[in-house]
Every structure is written in C-alpha cells, then in structure tokens.
Image 1 (cartoon, rainbow, N blue to C red):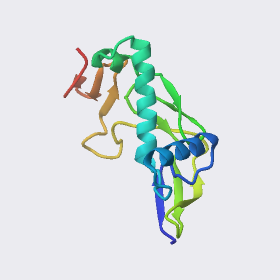
Image 2 (cartoon, one colour):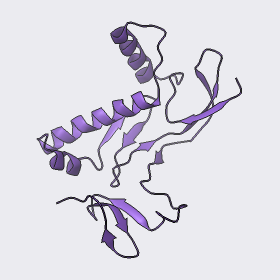
Image 3 (cartoon, one colour):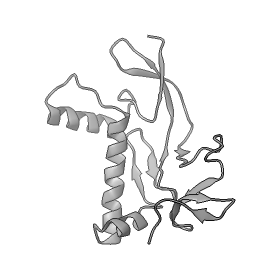
Length: 155
C-alpha cells in the first residue's frame, strides 16, 4: 500500500460501461476474482475503432481500414470517448491510482478530460523533430527538418 500507478484505466473506476464490461468478462472467464486491466481496455477501444473503420471503409483491406481510422470515436470504459488522431494514437484520460490491499486502486488524481496520444517525444533528441500524421503527410516518422519520411508510409 502507498504505491502509485499511472494508467488510463483501473477496474475500480465506477461507470455503467465499466460495470457491464467487468460483469461480461467475469461471466465469460468464469472466475469472479480475476481483474480487468488497462491493456484490456485498450484492446476493447482498439477493436471497437477497427469495427467502425471496417464499416466506414466497407472493407477489411488493411490500407483502406488504416485510411478510415483517423477521426473515428468510440466510448471508453471510464465514461469518456476515445478518438483516433491523425498520428494513429488515441485520446484517453490519465489516472493516478494508489494500490489497495485487494489489488485494486483508489484514484487519487485524474485529468479533467482526455489527453491526446503522441507518437514521438518532444523531449528526446532522437525524436524531437519527428512527426506522425497519416492524414496529411501519409507518414508515421516524418522529419520536420529534412522534410523526409522514413520507415513505412502509405502507398
């Protein structure tokens, strides 16, 4: 106890969507003591965004789905909305939780809204000149100084 964790989701966050998700998952797994976690919520969001992108693209073709993703939104489990940004990262809230004796977390701080996911750190010299934008630049590692895209880009 007294240890802190920073995550975008804790099972202990009380929302109707989270309660329903936990109930469905525990019924499926048939183990009432298992907990949900941040990577599970990330998968839940990612899958729902993929479904929306497939519907928008009217295809499961990878390139068409990738092109359809930016701008799509889906509910998260903490009561907000996750939005896919042009950099292929999403918006999510940030929570600081204190570990409880039962393995859950008491939220001691949270952002007032969602935080946009950033593909590259402005604080690391190796990436401070790198930008990801799959809408305008069609590139995930665009160097703003050399005006070059390195790595994978759209066709």
